Every structure is written in C-alpha cells, then in structure tokens.
Amino acid sequence: MKKVFVVLATLLTFLWLSGCGSTGKNFPTTKVSEIQNKVTTRTQILAWFGTPPKEGVRDGDVLWTYQFDTFNPIGKDLSKELVILFDPAGVVKAYRFSSNMDR
Image (cartoon, rainbow, N blue to C red):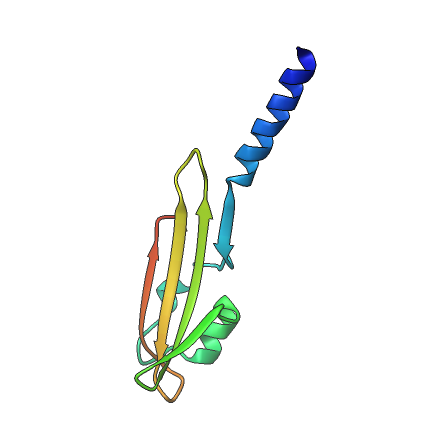
C-alpha cells in the first residue's frame, strides 16, 4: 500500500508541476513610464528592453512586441505586453503597455 501511495503522490506532483509554465521572454518594465511618443528612439528601446521577440510592419511603420505570460493551474495566470510602433525615422510613434503583474 505504501508503494502505491508513493507512486500516486509522485505522479500527482509531476502532473501539477507540468501544468505550470510560461511563454515569451520576460522583460523589465521599469522603463515603460519613460517611453515618450515622438521622442524615444528605437536605440533606446533596444537598450532598455532588449531585442524584441516579435517584429512586424504596419502601414510602413515598424512594430515591436514584447510579451510574457505565466500559467498556473491553481492560481492566477499573469501576463504583460508592450507593443511599440516606430515611424520610418526610428522614433516611437505610439505604444501600448498592459499588465496584470506587479511592476
């Protein structure tokens, strides 16, 4: 009976741990408040947040997306996302930050 309990406990622990996870690359959020439209440059964003995991183009403007999500089967899922749109000169045209994580 003890063997069955140990095997069952090990299996349940493994299943519980395999349910936790994350996607994306975690990024610092301390500099988000310093981003300014028509002022902050692509070089500054790169220095503050690193290489963006996602890059795209929208209407000729470059779009960078930083996203990080964590999943927890017994707790709250957490996410944060920073989307930055650059004009052709490499200056921030617009940005959006959303998060349900503590900064």
